[in-house]
Length: 162
Image 1: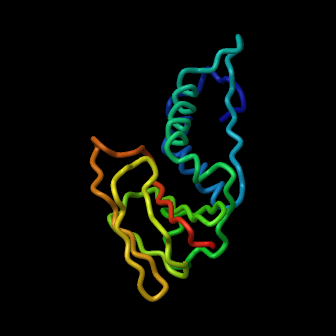
Image 2: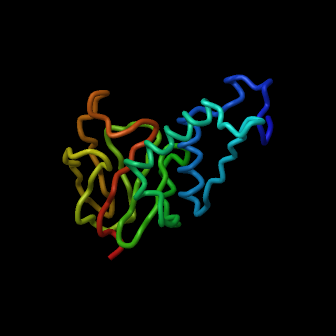
C-alpha cells in the first residue's frame, strides 16, 4: 500500500512472483513496459522479499527474455484466444506465444506456416500441424524435473512474418 518501505506491511501486501511475471507479460504484449517500484528501508537496504521477487523475475527472463526484450505487440491476435492466458509478442519474422496456464495443445489462427517451433528453454521437439490457416501446437512432455521455467511458457514460431 505504499511507494516506500512500510514496516506495517506483511506478506499479503506483496504480489507473488507469478503475479509479477504475468503483469510483465500482459504489459509487454500490449506494447507497454513495466515499472516496478522497489522501496528501500530507511538505511538503503532492499527488503529480502523484494530481492526474492526480482530474482524470480530475472530467472524467468533468463529463459524467456527474447520474447520480451526488443519486441512489439502483435495487433492481429486471434479473437478466439483466452485473453487472460495467452499473449503474443513479435520480433522480426518471429512470433512469440506466451501462455500463463500450461496447455497440452494450442491452436493459433490466421498466421503463416512457421519454419520451426520451439519451446524456449527446452531442447525437446515441439510438434505442430498447419491446416486451413491454423497452426496446432502440441506441447512437449514437461514435468517438474525438466520444466524450462515457472509461471509462464513461451513458444517461438519462426518465420511467420517473412
